[in-house]
Each structure stands twice: as structure tokens, then as C-alpha cells.
Length: 591
Image (cartoon, rainbow, N blue to C red):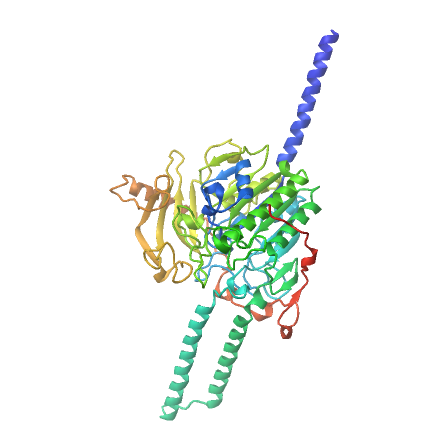
């Protein structure tokens, strides 16, 4: 009898112990810390874990080895601003007004009034409500102010982040002396046209006045000339001082460096990220480390400059990889690795048209995929997708089904125990069942690919087939014609003479033709019209789900507004300050 009691006691103890273990596991699985590492303009072919054999990316490759590699991971847009809006909200950017009907699809100025609307719900807002410490370090690119230069309506701190250290706009060639300009050609062209129009107008008015056709008040003409000259002067002043007015570093709401210095910039971003983890290692946290690498202007610190086999671009990639390694190390040092979900991706594909004034290639590699940034060819939207969570996600796994950067929103919101918003359409899907092998198919039967605000392409992955059908309603006109990009205009555009419409649409099966080389025809695909019919029905249903919203990228919201301009000193001091002392940086070494 005593033996039976001992056995029953042992069984009971083991059951209680197992329940305790399960409760701990349930808690850790339900409330992980989240580290989201986002590169800028990084090509899927730039990483060793996606087949690159000449760039050294051991730390990013480590994420793949210890986690899941998504081989068909897709950015919701091939441009920075809309892609990042979709990432934060889990929604197509067309739903939030973050997709442009105009030619320009991203924010270019710090003193623009457009941005991610305050009524949008970001994953940072929801995780903050659940007690997470939240930080965004690096690039924002989703607006700052609305009506005054201190309302910060679009600022990261207004969208659920407790802490911000970085750039509110983006890294541009104009921000780094000697790296050229993304505006110069366009500004020169429009200035010449404006001056020509003004000259013709003045001469015409003078002629009709002289011949007596009608009298032109010289006072009115003088006022018009004065207004025109002042406008030109302001425009010239703005672009001459672009670096000081737009390229600055902020900590929370305060400018700490204006203009931005690239000296040890990646080390500074990394140090800020490490310090945030160290401050919050005892509580769940959300860290978004949004790298400036590898958007131009390219830069690399002294310990990486000239070390890669691919010039300054390769140096920048390898420096970013070093930074990823530093983040993984600090998680390990604080025993946080097993309780943290780490995600690495890029906001869109490589910008293949990026070539320096000296002819050096400053854009990355999209592997076998066609096109690049600003296009919905696979090279523009198929991006790295790596997720690691030891003990929860099986290491060394590959998932080939279509997934989206919008999926991060519902995935981490559910893991944090928060409720998904019920008053709006969420286009992303929880990735955890797929990552843990509980299901083998993605929930994305259809994905809609927008070029700015125009529906450009649709992807269909039928549940009963291995095929991944993709149709294009229009495609960009590459220049030169036999090239792989829009080299004459630096990026591809979405309307007018920049595109070619297709009726019927171009059809590809990505499972057989991932390079999108040969469009299918009724002769080569017996179900051609049936496939187009199913996709058109999906488009109709999707279009009906859209609501009219304010256009955040209208010309009115894009233009520079002097009253919204932030300046850490006076304009007479050329908006200069530097409170971000490098002396506070700990010494860091490459491995």
C-alpha cells in the first residue's frame, strides 16, 4: 500500500511539475519580446542564406540557420513609405491613404504635412497597451507634423513608441556631401521651364502694351515679377540648404544633430538599440531597429570601409550584418534569446538603378528576380524574411508559400495577448501556425500589388494547387528598353507614358517561371481565361472593401511648408547643432 502511495505521489508530483512547465512555456510563448530588424533597399540576393557567395553576412545567415527562412516573402509595396505603413498597420497602404495618386510615392521633406494618420492602429500602439516597452531606432519615413512644427501628429511617439532615435524622413544622396543629388536634374529642368514661361509672358505683355492692344499696369506687372522672384529665391534657398533642413537626427521630439553626420552612424544606432534592450531586459519589449543601410547615400565606418568585395555597397551590407550580430549577442548575454522573436527583412527590393557619379554600382542584387525597387516584378517586392525563436520555431526550416510583411502585425499582436482591431480590415495573417508547422499553406490565397495607388498586379495561390499565378494589368517601360530597370528616370513610375497597359493582362506561373520571363497565353495555358476570371472576381471583392480616405501623399501634403520646418538653432545659424557626442559611444570591434 505504501508503494502505491509513493507511486501515486510521484505521478502527482510529475503532473504538477509538467503543468508548471507548461504554464511557464505558455506565458513565454504568449509574451515574447520582439526584435524587428528592417533593412532599406536590401536585395534578396545580397545575403548568404539566399544564395550570395561573395558578401559576408554570417550573423543574418545565423538567423536563417536557427530559424525559418521565408522564400516568397513579399513587401506590400515596392517603395519605402507605403511599405512601412503596411508593415506597421497590417493593411494595404491604399487603406490608410499612404499610397500616392501623384508621381511621387514617398515623403521627401521633413516639413511636409502628410503622414501615417493618427486613427491608424499600429502594432506598437497595441503592444504598448499590453505593457511592452517600445522603441523605434533608425528610419521612420512616415511623416512628422500636421499644422505646426511641434504638433508631432505623425511622429513615432504618436504611434505607440515610447522612445525614438533616428531620422523622421530618409537617407538621401543630398544628405551626404559629394554623393550627388536626387533633385538636381529635376529642379534644374523645372527652373529652366519656369524661367522660359516667365520670360515669354513678360515679353508678350510688353508687346501687347506697346502696340496698344490693351494696357498693362506696370505696377501689377512689377508685383507679379516680385512674387515670382521671391518664390524662386525661396526654392533655390531650400534646395541649396536641403541637407541642413531635412537631414537631421532626433531623440524623441528633440533634434540632436543637424545636419546628420554619417561618422559611426551605424555604431550609434546599434548602441542605442543595445541600451534599450539593457534597460528593459526584465520586461517584454518591442524593438524596431530600422537601418539606414543600404539606401543611398551609402556609408560605412572605418572598420568596414574597403573590406568587402563589392565596393561601398558591400561594405554597408557587411556593417549592417555586424550590427545584427551585436543585437543577437546582447539578447544572449541577458538570456533573452529563448524568450524573443527576432525578424529580419527589407522594406522592398534592391534599387538596381543606383549608380554613383563615378560609375560605381550603389544598388544591390535581387538574385534571379526581375526588376527592383519601385516595380512589382518579383525583384521589387520579394524580400528576405527570416524569423528566429529558439524552442518555438523549428530551426533550419524553409517555407515557400506566399507571405507578406503585413503578416507581422497580427502575428506579434496575438503573441502579446492583444486583440486585433475589429473596426477595420486587417490584410495580414498570423504566421505562427505556419512557422510552427501546424499548417502547411499560407492563408494568403490572393495578394494585391499596388504601384502607388494603382492596382498593378495580383498573385493567386489556389488551395488545391502548387501553382502561384501572377497577372500584370500594366508594366513599367524600362529604359533603355533592353535593360532591367528605369535608368533614365532613376525609378519607375506608375502612369501615363511610363507604363504599358495589357489587355488581356500578362499571366505568369511563378512556380514554373519565378524569373517572369515568358508570359503565358491561351495557347500555352489551357485555363488562361478561367484563371483571369477568378482573379478578376477577387479584384472586384477587394475593390469593394476599400473606403475613401484622405490622400496623405497628395501634392499639398508632399510639398515643403516653411512653417512646419524644425530647426535646432536659428535660420541665421543655418540650423546647426550637434548634441550627439561620439565620446559617449563604447568601443566596438568587428569580429
